[in-house]
Image (cartoon, rainbow, N blue to C red; front, side, top):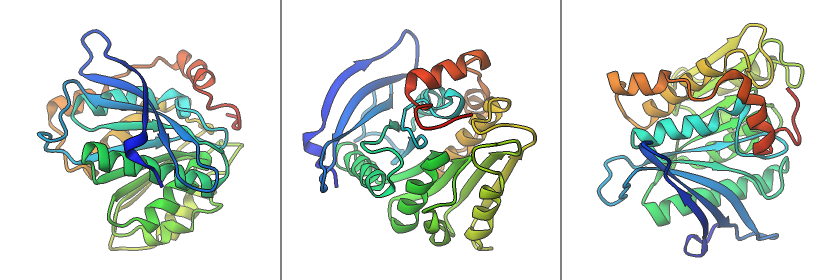
Length: 268
C-alpha cells in the first residue's frame, strides 16, 4: 500500500492557456518489492481539493508493457479534457508490467495517494488490454472507492472481479479485427458482469484493431462521457464540446504510444 506522505514530485507544467496542470510523481508502494509507481497527475488549473465540489478522479492504466499514453495515445488528451472540467486524472505506469498482483498494489497505492493528499475518495478505473486485470481486480474488491470501470480491448485472464462490480457501471470497448485479443474477450466480460441491477455497455468497433486506431476519437469521447457520468457531472454544452474536441491527430497516435512506452509489451 502507498505511503502518501513520502511521494516524490519531480516536475510540474502548465501549458499556455490550458485549463489544467500536470505533475510528474513517483508514488511509493509498500509491499514485498517496494519501489515507486511513475505517474502523471492532471489537475484543474488553480486546483484546491478543500474547495472542490468533485471528489472523484480517473486512473488510466495501459497494457502488458506499461506506459502512460494508452491506446492510440488517447490518455493524455483525455486527462487534459477531464481536468479542464474539474475531474483530476492520474496516468500511471507499473513497476512490474503484466504481473497483476504487483499492478494491483500499484493501483491501490495511487488510490491511497489521491485519498490522503487530495481528499479524493472515489475513482473511476480505466484499462487497456492487460490493464483490464488490475482494473477489475481492484474494482471488484474495493466497493467503497471504485465508482465504475472501463476497458479498451481487455483480456479475460485475472478479471474475475467483474462479477462483483454491479451495480456500479462498466464500459467495454473492442475492435472486431483485434488480432491480439479477440473481441470475444469483451463479450465474455459483458456476460460475466451479468446483473440487471447495474449498467453495462459493450461497444464493438467494426474492423478496428487492438488500439482502436480507426475510432480513437469516438472511444475517447465515450470514455470522457462515462467518467463524467460516474463523477456525477452533468453533460452541459461546455462539457459536450470538451468531450468531442480532437486534441491528437490520428497520425500522431502511434508515435505517442511509442514515446509513452505503451508498445513495449503490446502490438496493434
